[in-house]
Image: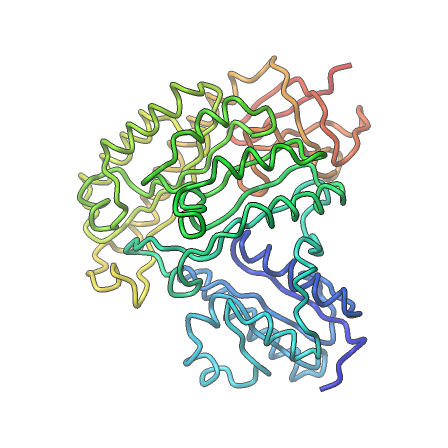
Length: 432
C-alpha cells in the first residue's frame, strides 16, 4: 500500500498513557515523512487510539469510530484505523460489529501499525515524540501494564503485566525532552510504586527520581498513580528533600470501608491507608495529596457510603476525583451483582464532590495573600492560566492572571501572589 504524503489525523481518547502512546506513534510517522495532526478535523487517514476502561469511555470510543466511518463513507477521508485499549479488549468482537474499519490494532501493535504505512519501528527514536501537550511539560511513561488484580479494573486485560523501562532509557528520554524545552515531567504508569521490581528485583522508584533530578533543564517532576500497597517509603523523604520534585502525590485509594476494599482486592485496609497518609503528612506537611474514589461498588450500602463520606470530610484531601462504579465483563467484580442503581451511584458522586468542593474552597482561601511559584500554561481569553507545584494539568486547580493588566510568557515560571480564591480556581498577580 502506498500512502506516503497522505495527511494522518490521530485521535486520542482516554488517559495520559494513551496520549504518550499517540505521541510516540506520531514521532515515528513524522520522522518517516508523514504529515501528522493530533485531534484535528482534517486528514486523509484517521487513526483512533481508543479507551476501553469503563462504560462511558468505551461508548465514546465506539461513537468516535462510527463518526469516522461516516466520514469515510461520505468520501471525506480515505481510511480508518483503530488502535489502543478498546481494540485490544474486544479484538474478536469489533471486526465483526464494525467491519468498515480498515484494520484494528491492539495496545502492543505499533510495529504492525507502522508496517501498514511502510514504516519500520525505529528504536533510536525513543524520546523523539511529537508532543501534543504544551511544549513546557510532557508525560513520561515509566512502565507499561499492571500486575495488580483489582476486582473492578480491566487494565491488565488490555495492557498486560507490569513492564518497567530501564532507568537509563528514561533518563535519556528526559534529556531529549529537556533539550526541546520541557521543564516539567509528569511521571505516569498504571502503578508507579511497583517500578523496577520486575527489572531489578526490587522497587527502584526512588533511584529513578534521584536520577531524573540530575537532568539539566527539568525543574519540576510530578508523580501520578502511586499505588498505596507496598509504597516505597523512602520516596516520601526524597519528595521532601529534592527541590525539583513537586510536593504532589496522586494516590488512587478507591474506598475506605474494609469490606469494600477486600472485595476490590486492593491489598490494603482502612488502617493501613490511614497509616500511610499519616506518614506522608508527618514527613512532608507541604505535600498535596490527590486521590480517586469509586462509589456504587457492589455491596456499597448506605452505611458503607456514609463511612466513606465521613472519612473524606475528616481526611481533607487537597485534590479528589470520584467515579461511579462501572460493571465490567471479564473482571472479578463483573461476577458480582451490580446492586447499586445508577441514580444512587450518581447521587453519591454528587455528594462526595459537593463535600470536596467545600474542602477545596477552604484550602484555597488559606492561599490568599501568599506567593507561589507558578508555571504559565496558556492564554485563554483575557487571562493567562498557570499552575502551582500542587496542581497537575487538566485535573487540578489553576491560577488565572488578568492579561489586560499583565504580560506573561507561556512556559515560564512566575511568582504569583494569590488575590482571590474559589472552589477550584485561584486568581493571582505577578510580584514585581
